[in-house]
Amino acid sequence: FSFYIDFNYRQYIFNENTLPIFIIMSFAPLFGIANFMFGMVGLSAVKKSGSFARGTVLAGFSSVALCIASSQFFSAYGAAFSYLLAEVILFAYVMLVINRVG
Image (cartoon, rainbow, N blue to C red):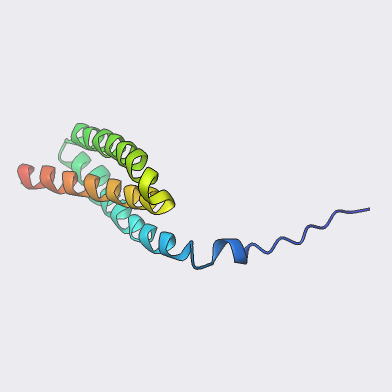
């Protein structure tokens, strides 16, 4: 006796409601990779890893605050945008520190 649940995940994951969320969030890994390359590796090479830690805390707090505020009005779209914006904030902070160093 076995249980078989016919769960068609495609209708829940890939539909007209979730596709815009995936599109918004698809840009976040680009900034995440850039943050790793310039932030973790680049700032560590010039002995500024503490600056990256401060930028990560700044991006984290701003992401949580923005997520709380925007998800009240825009639901999952606001949460996806706040995730993307946190990566952009960290990237901008890292670029600011790199420009000050060199």
